[in-house]
Length: 145
Image (cartoon, rainbow, N blue to C red; front, top):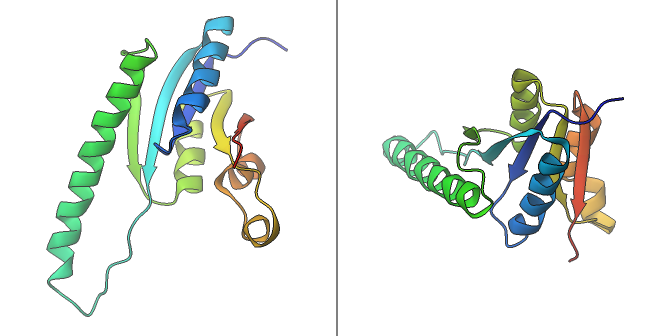
């Protein structure tokens, strides 16, 4: 088995994003791999009975997308990978991570994991969902609660 060639770093901009990004960039440097960055904005449900909400929702989505793009650019700069491809998607986090990983044909997805217990474990987590549906290896960087 050869080394990794293309890593997908999926970030949520939580305080632990730096730790997850550092791990991905370290691996990419060790393997001489490309890094692509991804942030997924979960869609916020819109009340279909309120026609006035829809234009506001579009504006909110645009603002969230622009803010996420700026945040990804800043993250890439901080980690010395300013030319890394950056993607901001709107939808289900798990679904979009898997879709983008397949489209880019990455061989490693790097995500953060909170090691949930109890009810949170039963409900599942993004890292767990990605692990079971991924077309490639997944590195779940352990984040202490």
